Length: 68
Image (spheres, rainbow, N blue to C red):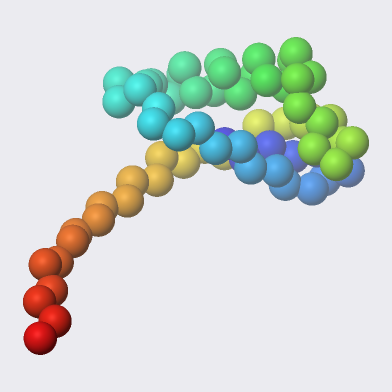
């Protein structure tokens, strides 16, 4: 989740292992609550506006390498 602060800086908040069935409206509502409740003030600046949200998925492929 990316927010802008009172001074126009962008701040990212990360959620590890979000629910798989999250909807866009639920994410937007959560971001609005974070701003309304003013629960984070990174660097002393209040979060002012939700800017964007992304779901980042990482896939890892392991290889069994035999070193002789």
